[in-house]
Length: 129
Image: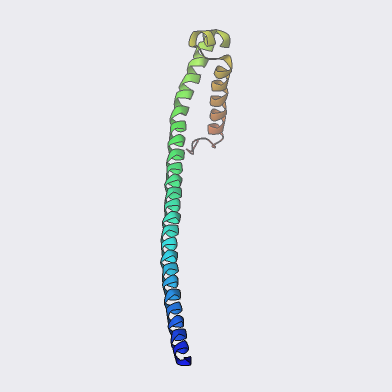
Protein backbone atom coordinates (compact mmCIF):
# COMPACT_ATOMS: atom_id res chain seq x y z
CA UNK A 1 0.00 0.00 0.00
CA UNK A 2 2.89 2.37 0.75
CA UNK A 3 4.21 1.69 -2.68
CA UNK A 4 0.97 2.71 -4.30
CA UNK A 5 0.84 5.93 -2.21
CA UNK A 6 4.37 6.71 -3.31
CA UNK A 7 3.40 6.07 -6.93
CA UNK A 8 0.36 8.31 -6.77
CA UNK A 9 2.39 10.94 -4.93
CA UNK A 10 4.98 10.86 -7.69
CA UNK A 11 2.21 11.04 -10.28
CA UNK A 12 0.70 14.05 -8.48
CA UNK A 13 4.06 15.84 -8.36
CA UNK A 14 4.64 15.10 -12.04
CA UNK A 15 1.17 16.40 -12.91
CA UNK A 16 1.67 19.54 -10.76
CA UNK A 17 4.96 20.23 -12.57
CA UNK A 18 3.24 19.88 -15.93
CA UNK A 19 0.49 22.28 -14.87
CA UNK A 20 3.06 24.75 -13.54
CA UNK A 21 5.06 24.50 -16.79
CA UNK A 22 1.90 25.11 -18.83
CA UNK A 23 1.00 28.10 -16.64
CA UNK A 24 4.52 29.52 -16.95
CA UNK A 25 4.44 29.03 -20.73
CA UNK A 26 1.09 30.88 -20.88
CA UNK A 27 2.52 33.71 -18.73
CA UNK A 28 5.59 33.89 -21.00
CA UNK A 29 3.35 34.13 -24.11
CA UNK A 30 1.28 36.83 -22.41
CA UNK A 31 4.44 38.73 -21.40
CA UNK A 32 5.69 38.51 -25.00
CA UNK A 33 2.37 39.85 -26.30
CA UNK A 34 2.40 42.67 -23.74
CA UNK A 35 5.97 43.57 -24.71
CA UNK A 36 5.12 43.53 -28.43
CA UNK A 37 2.05 45.71 -28.02
CA UNK A 38 3.82 48.11 -25.64
CA UNK A 39 6.66 48.51 -28.14
CA UNK A 40 4.13 49.14 -30.94
CA UNK A 41 2.34 51.74 -28.81
CA UNK A 42 5.52 53.60 -27.89
CA UNK A 43 6.80 53.48 -31.46
CA UNK A 44 3.53 54.93 -32.79
CA UNK A 45 3.52 57.69 -30.16
CA UNK A 46 7.12 58.63 -30.99
CA UNK A 47 6.36 58.60 -34.72
CA UNK A 48 3.37 60.90 -34.14
CA UNK A 49 5.56 63.28 -32.12
CA UNK A 50 8.18 63.36 -34.90
CA UNK A 51 5.52 64.09 -37.53
CA UNK A 52 4.12 66.92 -35.41
CA UNK A 53 7.59 68.37 -34.82
CA UNK A 54 8.36 68.33 -38.56
CA UNK A 55 4.99 69.91 -39.30
CA UNK A 56 5.63 72.59 -36.67
CA UNK A 57 9.00 73.45 -38.21
CA UNK A 58 7.44 73.58 -41.68
CA UNK A 59 4.59 75.76 -40.43
CA UNK A 60 6.96 78.15 -38.65
CA UNK A 61 9.04 78.51 -41.81
CA UNK A 62 5.92 79.12 -43.88
CA UNK A 63 4.74 81.77 -41.39
CA UNK A 64 8.14 83.46 -41.40
CA UNK A 65 8.18 83.49 -45.21
CA UNK A 66 4.63 84.87 -45.25
CA UNK A 67 5.52 87.59 -42.77
CA UNK A 68 8.53 88.58 -44.86
CA UNK A 69 6.37 88.74 -47.99
CA UNK A 70 3.61 90.66 -46.18
CA UNK A 71 6.15 93.17 -44.87
CA UNK A 72 6.83 94.38 -48.41
CA UNK A 73 3.11 94.96 -49.01
CA UNK A 74 2.85 96.76 -45.66
CA UNK A 75 5.73 99.04 -46.75
CA UNK A 76 3.84 99.75 -49.97
CA UNK A 77 0.65 100.45 -48.01
CA UNK A 78 2.49 102.81 -45.67
CA UNK A 79 3.98 104.59 -48.65
CA UNK A 80 0.48 105.08 -50.03
CA UNK A 81 -0.74 106.40 -46.66
CA UNK A 82 2.15 108.88 -46.61
CA UNK A 83 1.33 109.94 -50.18
CA UNK A 84 -2.31 110.51 -49.20
CA UNK A 85 -1.15 112.50 -46.17
CA UNK A 86 0.99 114.64 -48.49
CA UNK A 87 -2.22 115.34 -50.42
CA UNK A 88 -3.50 116.89 -47.18
CA UNK A 89 -5.80 114.02 -46.20
CA UNK A 90 -6.08 113.26 -42.49
CA UNK A 91 -5.84 109.75 -41.07
CA UNK A 92 -9.59 109.92 -40.42
CA UNK A 93 -10.28 110.77 -44.07
CA UNK A 94 -7.95 108.00 -45.29
CA UNK A 95 -9.67 105.62 -42.89
CA UNK A 96 -13.08 106.51 -44.32
CA UNK A 97 -11.80 106.11 -47.90
CA UNK A 98 -10.09 102.75 -47.37
CA UNK A 99 -12.21 101.16 -44.68
CA UNK A 100 -9.19 100.76 -42.38
CA UNK A 101 -9.22 101.96 -38.82
CA UNK A 102 -7.18 105.01 -37.88
CA UNK A 103 -5.25 102.72 -35.52
CA UNK A 104 -4.41 100.35 -38.40
CA UNK A 105 -3.12 103.30 -40.46
CA UNK A 106 -1.00 104.50 -37.57
CA UNK A 107 0.28 100.96 -37.08
CA UNK A 108 1.34 100.72 -40.72
CA UNK A 109 3.21 104.00 -40.47
CA UNK A 110 4.83 103.05 -37.17
CA UNK A 111 5.93 99.62 -38.42
CA UNK A 112 7.54 101.02 -41.52
CA UNK A 113 9.22 103.81 -39.55
CA UNK A 114 10.62 101.22 -37.14
CA UNK A 115 11.78 99.07 -40.05
CA UNK A 116 13.36 102.04 -41.81
CA UNK A 117 15.30 103.10 -38.71
CA UNK A 118 16.45 99.52 -38.15
CA UNK A 119 17.63 99.35 -41.78
CA UNK A 120 19.47 102.65 -41.39
CA UNK A 121 21.18 101.29 -38.25
CA UNK A 122 22.23 98.16 -40.11
CA UNK A 123 19.86 95.96 -38.09
CA UNK A 124 17.25 95.51 -40.82
CA UNK A 125 17.43 92.89 -43.49
CA UNK A 126 21.07 92.00 -43.08
CA UNK A 127 22.23 93.98 -46.12
CA UNK A 128 25.11 96.41 -45.84
CA UNK A 129 24.11 100.08 -45.55
